[in-house]
Amino acid sequence: MVTISREDKIGLYRQLVLNRIFEEKTIELYRLEGIPELPHSNLGEEAIGVGSCYGLNADDYVVPDLRIRPALITKGVPLNEICADMYGRLGGTTNGRATSHHMGYPSLGVVGTSGIIGGHLTISAGFGMASKIRKDKRVTLCFFGDGGSNRGDFHTSINFASLKKLPVLYIISNNQYAEGMPVESHISIKDIADRAAGYSMPGKVIDGNDVLEVYREVQDSVERARNGEGPTLIECKTFRLRPHCEAHPETRSQEELDEAWKHDPVPRMEKHLLHEKILTESEMGDIRKEYTRQVDEAFEFGKSAPYPPVEELYNSVYDGEAEWVRS
Ligand SMILES: Cc1ncc(C[n+]2csc(CCOP(=O)(O)OP(=O)(O)O)c2C)c(N)n1
Ligand SMILES: [Mg+2]
Image (tube, helix red, strand yellow):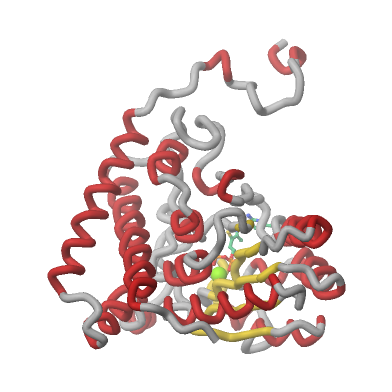
């Protein structure tokens, strides 16, 4: 099992803070001014994307779902480009065509995701198969939710990955809900990771709100995958602190939310850093200030970037001239 250096603990904390500030700003601006993108907040779930992607190589693949923005930010996708996509402007990855929920970033191995829950699971096995054939030692991290784990694509993908010993990590953010449905109303077992046994692959249940545990366990499985030992299913137990999306009302009880806030991954890591005397309160305050400024600048960039010209509407959408579309 990997040990985590002081520097890496600070690095992990910095990513947690950056993602938390980005998330808070997104919600604030959506409420105050409106953002064309409808936020599906990952508030409270940041430790999963951060801990999973922090130790990856730049060319490892990340196949996200719509709530795992911290994976993209930790992988290094520039904030300006994310914000431009959120505002539907030029300067993002899709030049106004898709929201940041569906963005990809090929130079960092980030594969654009599917709007269909679970649709990206079989694609992940494909990336794993490509790496196996090329012997390029790249790993693929596939992110999805408890709801996504009920799709047929999940079983198709993990069966194939296990059979072919593909270098793929299947990382579930089990945030206890799929939209309004509590997990016990749509999954018959307590731990989704138990399903791995049916495909003769390891399944782990971990604390998704502990960034150090996520980092350690993912690194362990990454090493296994790079050594040709095959895939792992990792279930990260967590909780979504916001409604399914910002346009939906909160349907859960105040008691349930109050309890969940006690396990917020950010103060939890702060406690650890203070206890280990790795950072002081004032140093943590400086980090928050630094990222507040960076995030503000990125949103300004997104907001003030130009809209794509209408005559370019069909560029990159259809192959060829596609005159018939315009006529
Ligand atoms: C096949 C399909 N069904 C329904 C939807 C609408 N939808 C979007 S997110 C979501 C909930 C998914 O729950 P989960 O996988 O647990 O992820 P979470 O939203 O909790 O992060 C649903 C039903 C969809 N995009 N695709
Ligand atoms: Mg869920």
